[in-house]
Image (cartoon, rainbow over all chains, first blue to last red):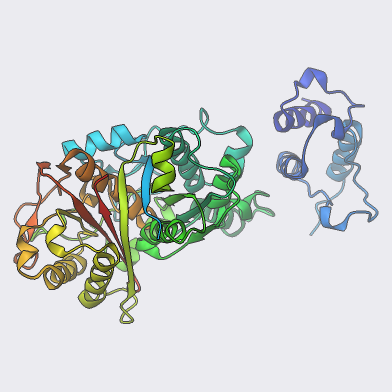
Length: 88
Length: 399
């Protein structure tokens, strides 16, 4: 399974949207995830890929190096974090 | 002051996943205590309990509710839905509220999180760990599920929590601060760590729960929830609601003595307070649902308290402890036991104390043993006496 397919599977499970209806350009806003859904999605991604995603809703507006706005952004972010040695 | 009646009941416990199933089991005197099947059970010295089996939240709750709720909150939501349904349309409303009792809250969620970070070295816990474990979670979910915007909070007074919750909800309606309330308790402490903690205190039986028996050797843990719709009487009558019983009085006291050992004086004072609040004489009481944990100390102390309050009448008041059937539900104990009180008041059936071989001479009251007894019960007491000496007694009248 590709990273993209796994990301889509996680988003589909969280949002209730069919996986076939989710593509690389799909925006997270379009999936109707609320803040709890987003937090649970991030947890699922972290658990699945063994990564730690920088995300703090309380720090809104701050520069983020993880693009959560689209499927393609999440896939790129996951790939970059996996390529990096685990943070201490 | 307003009068308060019970117009709906719901439950999930080891005897049954609904009120009708539970009532039938209580009337049969069926014991739901059995071997525990949980991860790590081989490392427990106490391996019996009254576990809820066959519980599936999926037909009742949304996937989001299931993900957000610890088992104790799931029990509460399912029990409340049954109670609200039974109470009929118009039972609740925006001014209505919720008071629930629990001792352990989301214990399984705390345990899972601790296990992950301490034992497994995990970097993170599930993001819903806090909303799952907070003791008030079940209350909050009930407000959301039923649109209740009145008084809402959780009380945590160990084994008396749900009696305190029901008593406070009764007082809230009686004082005119809410037209109706959901009240009860919920507990899901049958986890590896939960049982280990109780094991440590050496109050759990490895053989069974035999309240008032000379051979009794401790309590047996249960789990589950019971939730009731409490309503101002005139309002309930006006909408043609089913009236299961009237809550006539409530008494609460503290022993101010010991963190675990009970004091008969504190228990007696709570029973007297409930009778006084209800305007009932001891001679009018036709049934006492005892706290009756099955520990040597509690049962002896409770029987001494009953003798102190009832005097020469003590020997003729039927007493039973249904913990011998559904186990000790800790913060949900009084709520589930209120179902036995409703059975006595509504159908004239006193649920029995199971497992008694021969009565302890210190407990030589009219203990209903073995099988249910038919009796006309016009009023009843329901006792709950918590560790730490916090006592809560409800007084009820037949509808």
